Length: 444
Ligand code: 5AD
Ligand code: SF4
Image 1 (spheres, rainbow, N blue to C red):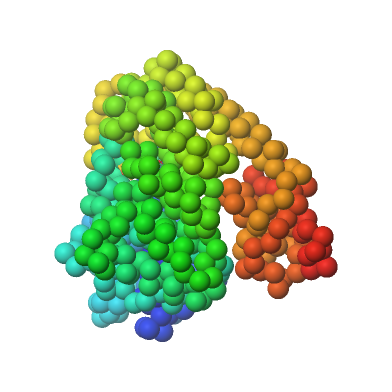
Image 2: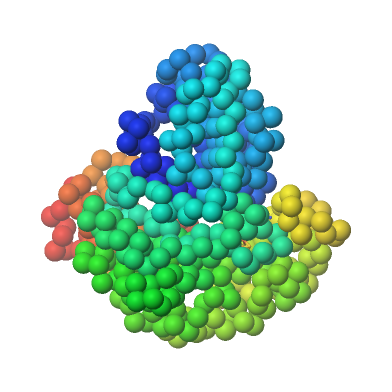
C-alpha cells in the first residue's frame, strides 16, 4: 500500500513541478514513506534519517535547503516525538493527509529553516474529508501491473496490530471511483491490477445504483474492462472469505489463482487471544471451500510466532496447520510488542531465543513447501505476464498465475504481454522458463 501511496503522492506533486529522481542526492525534496507494522521498520527510519541528515549537512543534497519529510504509519504513530528526535525534519505527515502536501510544502518554504532545524510541520490528522476525494486522477507512470487501493483502514483490532491506530477506521472507496481508476490505468497500458486494502475482502463500496457492492461484485465489474487480463487482491482476512468470493475464483477468468490469506497461528487459544475471530477449523474450512472452487489455487499466508503466552503445544498447532494447508509461499515473523496495542501489555511475553527457535523451524517447513510448490511447475506450461526487464540483456521477468517470478530470454518488445512459457527449472524464489515454440523467434 505504501507503493501505491507513494505513486499518488507523485501525482499530487507533479502539478507543483516535482518529478521523481533516481537518488536522494539529486532531490529537492525527500519523502520517506514508512511502515510501522513491526518494530524493525521504525528503527530503520531513524537510521536512514541519520544518513540523510549527514548528507544534508555535508551539502551533498541539491538545492539550498532541500525539504526532508517523513510520511506513512511511523510518522502517524510517532507524530511530535519524531520532530523532537529529528529536529532537522521539515514535514511529518500520516497516511490520511497526503492530499494536503501542496499546502504543507508551501508552509515549509515560508518557514525559516536551516540544515539543523527544519520547518517542523506536523499533520497526522484523521481528517473529516476523504483523502481520495481530494487526490488528482492517477497520472503517474504505470507499467503493465499496478496497485489500486480500494479499501483502507481496519476495524478488526487484532490485539498485536497497530494498523487500526495508524491507518484509521475501515473505509471502502465507492464503486464508480474504483472502476474509473481501473479504466484509466488500463488505458495507460496496465494489464494486471492488484486491488489493495488492509482488509480488502471486507470491501463494501457504495454503488451507482444506490446499493452496496462486495469484493466479488467489484471484481466482476473490473473484469469487464477491455484490455485488463489479470486481477489480484490483497490482504484478505479469513473471516471475510465469503462463499461469493470463493465462487469468483471459479467463475472469473481474470481472477488469478493465488490468495494471500494470513492465518497468524494454528492454535485456537492463541487465535482467540489475538482476537482473530476464527479458529483453525474455520480457517481450514475456508481453504477447502477455495480449493473446491479453484483446485489449483496457490495459498500464501502470514504467521506470528511467540505471541504472548504461546506454549510449545500452541506452536505445534501452527506447524500442524501449515502441514495441513501446504503453502505456495508465506511470510513469518517473531512477535514484536507494538506500543499501544493490547498484546503489548500481556505478562507472558515469550523469550527472544525461543521465538528465534520456533521461527527457524516454521521457516524450514515453509521453505520446504515453497520449494515443492515451485518444483512441481517444471515441465508445465504457464501463462506469464512479462512485467520487467531481467538483470541480463535479452532477459525479461514476469509472473506466473501463482505469483512466481519467471525468468526467461525474450525480446524487449514482449514487455507487457502475457505469453505461454515452458518451465524448465525451479528455484527457491523463482522459476526459469523458455518461450513456447511459436514465440521462440522472439527470444532475444
Ligand atoms: N509482531 C509481529 N508480526 C506482526 N504483524 C503484524 N503485527 C505484528 C507484530 N506486532 C504481521 C502479521 C501481519 C503482517 C503484515 O505483519 O502477520 O499479517
Ligand atoms: Fe491488523 Fe489485519 Fe488484524 Fe486489521 S485484520 S488489525 S490490519 S492484522
